[in-house]
Length: 451
Image (cartoon, rainbow, N blue to C red; front, side, top):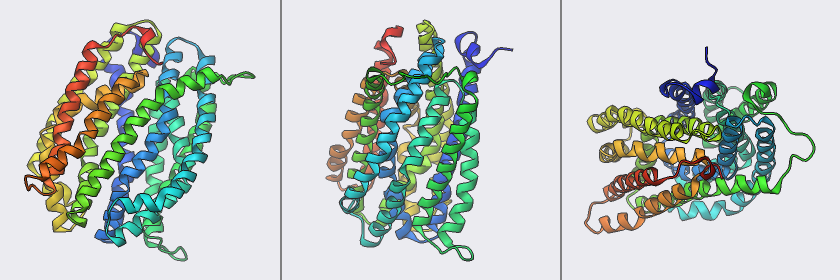
């Protein structure tokens, strides 16, 4: 029987593609479960709590994007080193990544806590949702070291071709998070009800235990993964610079995405709390299809990265194209579902009629973009996994930035909050076209990848 690495480098592509993507998607299902369970419990606190927590989603994404300064480079370089059968280099990449992540784990929460009042005020929320949003974010910022640690170790396993282990750990975190949500949000016995702060604390505690579990598993499975921890002289400023150079464009693209959505949130806030809740709810519901595509894209990136390391550029290219085709097939029924019964889908998470109406319109508007969305998300993740992050950053930054002027332009026609929904759909299409052009023109020689 072939090993995972042999399957990645030789033979039909579907087996390693799905062998990597399915555990990734299962892990993302649990990741979405964090969000959906939090949303369900917080929704029981009322529309103010729901709007406040959903409005913070873009800030939380910013925190994840900042982690990509390190994690994207670690994934790309570990995959390349494992493909080249260089376990000592893979280990040096991991150790360097840990050092860089430790710096970010101190700097980002400190800056975030200082900027928090102004950031929440800039969102333009009504007073009570704004107060609850600030409480929620404060807890997440204090617990940020557990979040970045989890993402870093997850990227090491993924780059080495093991997506199953992070999935198993994340599933355990999800179950623990659900229990902690119920206890910390509403209280139990001597434990007081913490409301939205309890939801954030449940996330931090469960991720912290998951981070510890991944660290132990990494130390126990170094040989199997092809990662040898280096001895004296492991630090290299050149290696650290390379990791940051790969990760910084991906991080910048993610941050731009979040900033643009904060601007859209401010525009949407002018139509009241139901519209704000609908924007956050619609994006979270759309996330089910998004994570299918991310799973395919990151699986293809691991396959492509290891094949480039092994000097097989054509197989790397074929893996990316195969992932796009599967993404389109998966998103077709998903788009039809969002178009056909958006009210029923939105009603799972809220009973407020105004929120359901606005969220249903969002889902119906974006439903027709699900096929081009497949191309955008898969190829974006392939580019990041290969370390080819600058073109991906430019496409994402420019395409996402167009949403603000386009929304303002559509608002002049009197469409109301649906102007925001339509600008999101139109720019998804534009970004998909741009990624297809990037893919067609990209050089797939090994020297052009992974920094």
